[in-house]
Image (cartoon, rainbow, N blue to C red; front, side, top):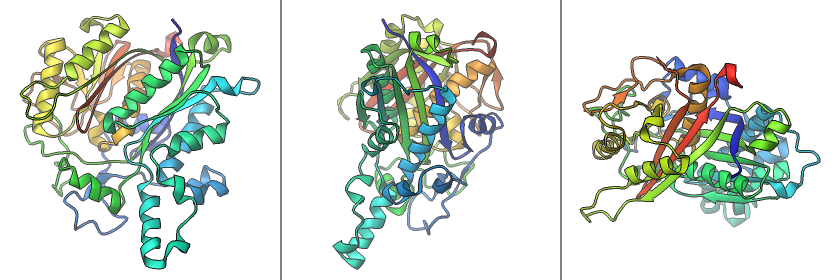
Length: 405
């Protein structure tokens, strides 16, 4: 069966623009959860977020694209450019039908949509941008990336909130197995505007604390909910044989995927995160002992943290595998979060160090990496993500150490 390998990554995150900047900030434990300062957020229950700073789309994209695109799409286009550059792939001469893109989005272009709705009601329909017809749409990142890079092969969009980023990568892997040569994949989000925050607050899972150091504490006895963030990652996936044939630097491999849905609330039946993990293990032909580190979903609500800890303990045993959640530094990025964790997993293997979970203690029987990075010698990581309303997804990746590439 065709193997899908990662040959390039592009990252936009609150603590770093670009993969290496993001990695350095994460290893240093740089927290970026702060009060929202782009507007007066005092009316909202949650007033904190992980905000991307110092990003100017005009420095990265053609001027004609700026008025057509939401901030989310500007992030996605830039990260895709960086991922392609990182992969050093030259698609000239390749069939455009063998090149595709699968992304995930949980919200769409909320910032653009809010602005144009305000124009509609304040000025009238003649003042609404023609680009509103697609800029707000959750599928727009796939469309804009495919147009920019002339990708005419498999394409898709996954909408599964936090789990969507994993599902998109799995979809790209499936396309590679079905004959695609190269796929761009991942997830990107930016919905911290008032419109987006109103929607997020309505979900009832956001922390209402004002102290950035105590607002998002997954697995901690003092956990009180989530803090949102913006950003994400785009990856280049290739057919392994083709990548090796062109002399590409292979950063890792997608080896296992599993997904499962929770039963209806009130049914009395347990959730199915453990089932998703076991499905991914079977797909990868691994036992639990083959997993060297887990990048947790880390919801931040006591009930869901207990459920995730219980699933990990059931599969791996008490404190059976190191568990980390570096998203405590940047917030939960919806569909952008899991692709960032996949990038972190590959970097952790490359450099032999697990990035930390900041600020938390735990009374769960899991081995959380905290109080700084932890050295390790493994090469296989499990990345978990759960979406609102019952989505559970698990992805297993193997990385490459610097001296083995």
